[in-house]
Amino acid sequence: MLKESDLEALEGVTFITDLIGEILAVGPTQWNAFALENNAPELTGQWVVGQNLFNFISGPNVRLQLKRSMQEISSGSDLRLVMQFRCDSPRHRRLMRQAISPIRSSGQCEGFLFQSVELRSEERPPIDLFDFSERERVASYDSQLPIVTMCSWCQRVQSQSQSLENWVNAESYSAAEDCSNVRIAHNICESCYAVARPR
Image (cartoon, helix red, strand yellow):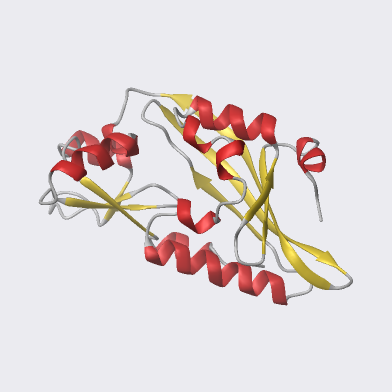
């Protein structure tokens, strides 16, 4: 099984899990820098190692899709999942590539290597939708707030507006709607569902 020192040598934000998603190790330098850059000190390596990955993933369909992918990867000889996804913060738009690969010993899958590499990042005016901590705080006071569904992979928003398409980018949605007092629900849009499969 890979160790923390192995993960440090890899590019990007890396971590390994066992077969059921328990986080066994992270590449601490990149992992911690990314957590702090996104104002999430509670997600530094010392707090997440030993936790289950699925505790940090919102949306039942998102968790189910990832569990299915991990099961497929563990049973196939050369299967892995590689896809691009967005990982935005309120002030940054980020495009990343994630690979999920099996870790095998004697032909048996023992766990998974997750590796996320930033492909592009750009600053932009802040978008409230991506301040997830604030959205949770506001929602804890008012359970009647409208729910906005966001795709966990492309971070487009499902719009109920007649003037917008069904799934629109967060920038367009934010410009057309008031996003400050909403609850966020995570799901997978049809486009991402079609490509979020091991190959």
